[in-house]
Length: 458
Image 1 (spheres, rainbow, N blue to C red):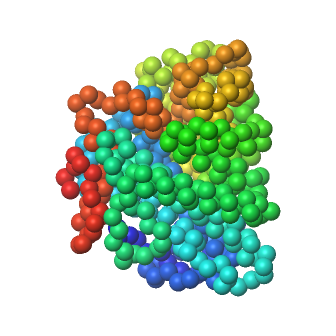
Image 2: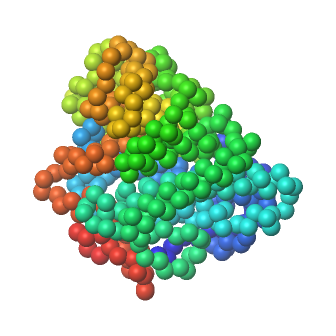
């Protein structure tokens, strides 16, 4: 692989001074100067925050990556409104497709920033011993973010669900001139696991710098839930059970009357179920490039809910009220109802909610664990949605609850695939096309060892 981006090391003094701002911006990372060594705690923090900035981009978690998980699923679909996502929904992507290219580049840009932090010799930083220790904690965050980036790339571009053996390119240092081949799926998964475990070890060692009350930075609790996602994907239910047990009770399920406001701009970072959010803010608003604009009747009216999904909710279920029926179409965002309501795109991006953690744990408990614990997790959610507690829970009930609770949050396609359910895929569409194409801008580089995914034009 040859990274096609460069990461600047310019005006970091200004960047550091602004780094605690809720409106931290990305411009300092778009210079053409090749990266130099980091020399202070402030610079380490700045590059980690720069990685968060890359993640909140509209081509990543700010919009597209969430949409991909819903467009190709059985709960929502893209109607082609305003011309968005046509090639994704129709499985007609080419190797030059902008969705495949731009998301790929954004993910590797984020990974490039984490690699700079990871490969910094912290013993050479200026500052006090406490500064070095805090820099170690942020280096742990960088390992976690790199792991998540590799995991997202693997799900989108890897061949696990197409019958192939190739994963993704896994660069472990920032080198814009490097040519690196794709790892196998097994090698990619091993690297993700190694990075997650390294992050947990480092962040736990420096846990005095952990601030879980700051929901806009990755905490140890948030890391454990991210890891549980990966281990669900791998089918390592024992590890999921352990991770979720360690987070259990540190947050609360959003009560019935507070569920909708937890998705609102006014509660950013303060919701009782919020574990990790990507901070946006008014000055860094995604505006018309936000996820809201894709979901909303007040926006592009593009990503809408199937009637069959709406019919899953009973009239007593408060989540039913998040969906609006307008002129025969079901929308997940409309006026003051639904999810992702802020039309300016200033909403924080909900990366981890406590409800997801409980659902991850419940599924794992029903796969070789304790059914009573699964029931406890399950009832904590449904009783806060206006539904009565149950006396027994099955795996099918957990799967259905994931569909209802996490609607629109970018999980569904990945859940179906890891369960081996391809029913959402049109019969005429080859399984090869479940993986996005490796962008031609990558495979056309002279001397590259990167192999394209089958079924595409490169």
